[in-house]
Each structure stands twice: as structure tokens, then as C-alpha cells.
Image (cartoon, rainbow, N blue to C red; front, side, top):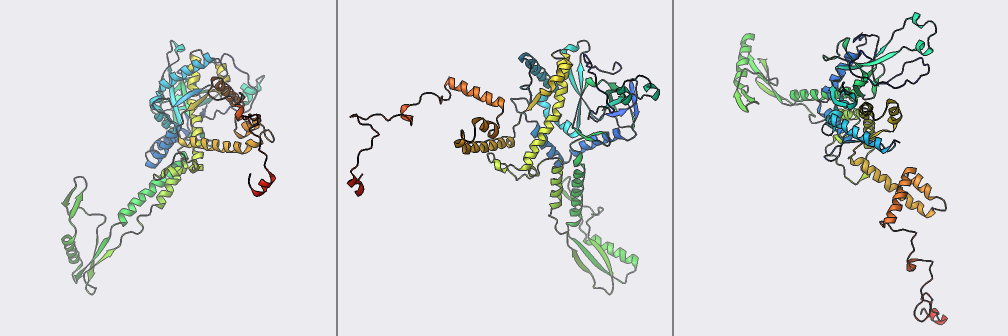
Length: 535
């Protein structure tokens, strides 16, 4: 790795691995090659690199289509929800079991990473680049003289100019003879690095400078073409839909331009004139009666220009003697020109290919806040898709945070391997669909609790209600109980175990009235009065 440009984070100790007959699959779409030297060189026999270069270019051209751009805009707006007060993403360390001091340092370093990315102002552009291209590269710039200061700058790299490469060592049979470890016999040692060419990796011969893997942060979409070992964008399955929509719209315009106007057919009686004379006579009649006025769309003027012929000109046909003489007939324009069902079909198909609910295509469709029953299954499915995008995009923060913490000496590489599973990233969600869905679920659970409450202590326990109906976890139950106890002590809520007012106690004896007679005694009624109804 000393030959590579950049820096490397070395482990304090290497963990021994058991024998395996296959290489570890990183699922990052790196290209396997056999090579060496400062400048890497390989031949792209399958055209993977060239295809990847062209694919990224095609993805960027796709978003120029208004419908595709609108769908991508919906995805990005749902994923990155920022406002003026809060940052779009925060570090969630509630599941991480470390000291509060370490958590504070980790939050500070995460804020520094967001500052280097300028994520408060450029979160929309960063996520859109990742979503459209399917991959995102940043060069992590540090001060070689003082690496303990951490990252000093993050520079964006065009994905068409860089590629992750896995280099395999080709071993000859004589090298595997003798006492060689089984793991070395079955698999070849490999080295990973990034290959960068400022002119772009679009040629079949790959040549460029090697960059250490720790010097570059790489975040991909997670979608792969396993046959060609290529990383694909989320727009890949919409390529056909975009092309179909574009062709159907172009053909619609051509059809309407050519079929919309009514054209006339002029049958001119030329008598017994010879062919040349007949053609000359026909041209004279055309010049006499043809509309010579031309509208100039640039200046808004009407000009008398005879030298331009329109593609929608009328037809002039000669007719010999013996016919019906000079006649003018009209060709009707095209029928059903106002139908757009095929265009709408392909628009919905495009939105479906991009996982965006087709209801968002209709501008007339409104969403009423407070009516959760109107939330469709497509919206719930869309929210799950957004959650997956956030999870995948968080790998960018994961790698940058790892580098920053290790360089500044907050944690070691081994400690990071233990911590990384418990570090999460909390995105601001300002969409009302999720909130209304949670309110609807909570209302249904409370209605179920009201129905089951009379049977608590007979068929159900309080713990069963809280865990199975309200779906409260053990941690939530503990926190809620502590909050209730604290609020009782402060007097925010009354203590149900406190002494009740005797007048409100149904089991207490009734107070005595004046004269010593109990107030609750029922006066004696004469049986004869009761028979008469006088009570």
C-alpha cells in the first residue's frame, strides 16, 4: 500500500481467518484485475467500464425529462427533509454502550463532517447526485504533517473518472507446492484500491493513478448487475419507460401537426392543353389563388413571402377535358386528436418504475390532513422505500465518521468494529403520511385497550396489555413508569393511591343526618299507601 496515493488506516492486529475456497464478496461492484505497479493497467474485455461510463451519462440525461425529474424530486424531498432550524440528519447513539464523554466527542465529530460536506445547504444536491448516478465518491483530504487533526476537506469526485478495483495475485502451480497454508492454496491474496483518471474511464484500456482505499469514501446504491459486476442506479429500470414516453410524445406531436389541419384538393380543368402547357397553367393558377401570407413567429409579423412552401400545402391536381371541370374538395383533419390515454399510461408506468405512487402524478389529487384512512398502500410502500434509501445513504456518514474518529484518536479500529452496528442516523421526517399512520395505529390500539379493560385481572394482565396490545418494549415501560412517578411527586398528575374524599368513596358509611337518624335510611311506607301508589 506504500505505492498508493493517499493514506491507509492500519489495524493494530490482524484477526486470523479460517480457510475458504472463495474470495470475500464486498458487493461494491469493484472490478477484478490482475496487475501491479504504480500505474494500474488492464484490458476491459467485457466493456464493463465503458458501459458504466455510458450508463452514468444516460442516467443524467434521463432526469432532463420533466416527468422523470418530477419523480426524482419527490424521492429526494421525502428523503431529505430539512428546515431552517434543524439539520437534516442527526447521530443516534442510544443503543451504543459507551461513556457520555465518548458520545459527546462522536457527536462533535459528526457535526464537523456535516460542516465539511456543507450538508445543511447542499443536502438536496448531494443526495440527488447519489440517487441519479447510483454512486458517490469523495476524496478525504488530510494534512500529512499532522493527521491527528482529522479531515480538513472533502472533495467530490465524478464517478465517471474513478473506479474501485480489486487486484488479484496470480499464483503459478509451482508456488503452491510444498507446505503452503490451505487458505493460500484455495484463494489468492488481493488488494483493493481506487483507479482515477481525470480524462474519464471510458476506454477499454484502463490506466490511471492508484489511490488508497481509505483516502476515498464510496457510497453506492446497493443495486447490482451480478452478470456484469456493475453497480446500477435506481433509475436503471426506468430507462425503457423514459424512452417509451419520449417516443410516444414525439409521435403524438408529429401526428397532430400533420393531421390536425384541413387541407383542400383543387381539381383544375386544363382542357386539351399539352403536358408542358398544362403544368404552366396549373402553376399560374396556384400562384394566383394560393395563400401568400406567412406568419413570422420571431417578430410577430405577417409577411407576404412566396418562396416558402409549407408542408401542409393544399393539393393541386390537373383534370383533362371530359371530367367534371374545376372542382374544390376538402380533406378532413385527423380524428380523436384529444385522446391522451396512451401518454398517461406511460407516465404512470414511469412513476411505477421509479417507485413513486402514481397518485402524485395527478396535480388535482389533494391530501387532507387528519384523514388517515385516505392513505393508500402505495404511500406506505413508498415510505418503506424511502427508509431503505436513508439506510443505504447513511454508509457515506458511516465511513467518514470512522475515518474522523480514528484519525483523532477517539477510538481504535477494533473498537469501531464493535461499535458500528449500534451507531444509527436519524433523519428529520416532516411528511404527514408517517405521522398520520402512527396516529391511526395508536387510536386503534387505545380502542382495543378500552374494550379489554373490564377484563384486566380476570383474563388479561396489565403487563399483557402493555406489551401485546400497546406494543411497548421493556425499555419504554421502564421509562414511562419513571416518568409517571416523577410527575406524581411533582404534582403534575394526581396520585391514585392517595386518600380519597370520603364522600366520593362508594364503600364508606353514609353520614348521619340531623336528629341522629341516618341520612341513607329509607322511611317506612304504609302498605295501604303503597297499594294506592303513594310513596
